[in-house]
Image (cartoon, rainbow, N blue to C red; front, side, top):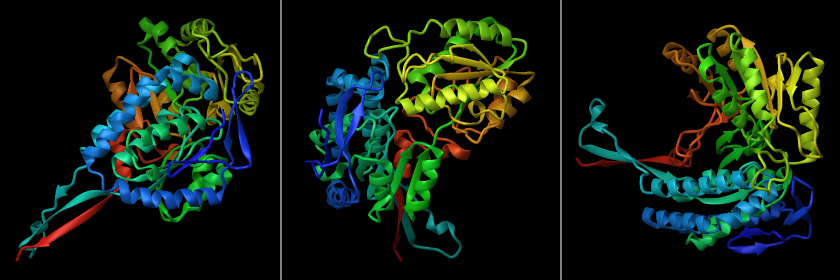
Length: 476
């Protein structure tokens, strides 16, 4: 499949191309152009025209376009899912789930297009002010630069692009070079659904080339980015005076309280599914589990037993429970981190072996020291660490013992402990009796500390992607 950039509705090719490989076996899926600064500049000129066109559309017209786009993707679900599996390496079940969520995200954004509200400002509440009335309204920013990751290239692109369009902005999308083909298809659907071709642009290529040019562009009013902390910091240092929304990952923690002995099997399965979904390549993947010492041994038995039932292999097969990581470099790093933890005294109780270049067994590691990379950093692979703690206080301290703060979870029947955890854990989202991998697309989603700034979820993204204009009338 030969990919292309999409600028002002036209297919743009370059002499230099980037290969997209199927993570499972390294076979060629397709190629994309290696976009450069001149391509970003061309897209910015297009997006300027697109902004003038889209901001003149009524809220209802933008709603209609998004609804049409959702229907088109729903009808072509199998096609999108198949391409997701080939580009990302996720199982076909996971891919169908992502397509369904993308349809929902676009639909939610369509509804929000009709709910961008202002409010009256009581000017006469200030001393000595009479005969003045007014209000504020939310207006679109202009051009939004959307830099999207490889793990959920369809739905996470929808989380950036659909709210931007709903609010009347134009977009330039720079997808991951690993997973650009599905994003190009999405952009084509949005144009087919009725958005001005100039308002939806895709520039493919590497982050240090096309991505850097997009970040530096003076025409781009906001960058919305999902990726690593290191890249997020570089973007903010180079982008200058813009708005930013950053979702920068996590090493999500879960605490299991001492009163959960009666349902440890259920919890262990939830935790395992949360840690091994998409081979652990989820920003809110369960990575660190802190179990009360009374339940520790039983929990290890349960999570090990379930993890061994997961079938690892070809993600195109319906019975595959877990597919590959994105590429060989990622697999090399994950295995290095496992070996480092082992050298520091941790114990592998399940998995820990590399099946092929990109396939790693679902891995459970216990008694991991705090200085190990598996504890401190985001593994972004099929590895769950489990350590014992003696109290809710220690559990909270260990969950907080992280530079990240995206989401965390607690399993308890103790209301006081649930409130204590939700109050004291430093995260953007707290899941009570649920794993931190839980997310619905309408909720405010984002983190604190190094997990980022701003919130996604269509309603909340639109707040980020608009600015307030205040209007005052003197009626004297």
